[in-house]
Length: 354
Image (cartoon, rainbow, N blue to C red; front, side):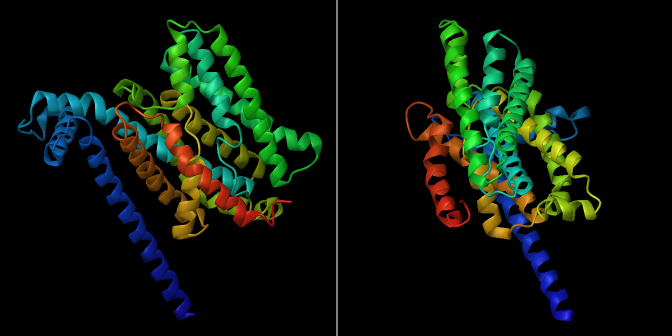
């Protein structure tokens, strides 16, 4: 008994240490991301500029900061790099936690927002809003509606054909994704080449190049609330993974819980799509990496996925704006990493797929 208690305590201590390390690494990568670019800004000045921005938002000038940096450094950090770095951090966390929640709820390691068709459906909704020149609020609402419709259709197909296997669920997601791609083709055909077509193309490729602080301010609170909701649900997600009968016997309302998880996960995916377009593979890759580090327990895995997703997306964004003279679409880089990782998952799961 004492050995079991000591083992449990040591495991809890190790998890907290890993989580603390992930938080520290997130802060370090954040500063690195804001520093790196065509115009280099020293680390020390980056910290001062960011701290000055926070201090300016506080009342009564509580923490005055001596402005020892140039105006060019201030513009590079505040107007260009800070918004896209914050967006990368939020989007990475959102897609990772949403993917982890989907995988736990469906008890399927290959489920993710893009494989279920949520990302493509959200892209269609956002593109329709852009087509009518809607503002960021309506773009986000359109993305959310498209994502909800896509996930409902994906989960409805296995019920209609009375086959709930992993393969059928993945095929249903492919069907919904193909339908969304066809709708996107129609939208591009009717879009005005001089105005909306460029914005729609930008959305479908996935990029943070044109993200502004006002967009981060509009979508950021929604993402924070969605991630917080799923983190609160992580204990019940463990119960759902045991099966419906076990969950009901433990007092969990399975129907309501699934609806809540789907809505929160879809809201996170739609919010990400509304400011950065379609970004695939993050919701599949990061939960698996987090699970490899701390195990399948959602109590530990979801908080770690929050940090690892943010770190991953910030690193991807650094590569997107430094590997070439122009910004590389983020979906290209995530696809290069995600495709071989998905093949690795297929190899591990090949015996249970059929």
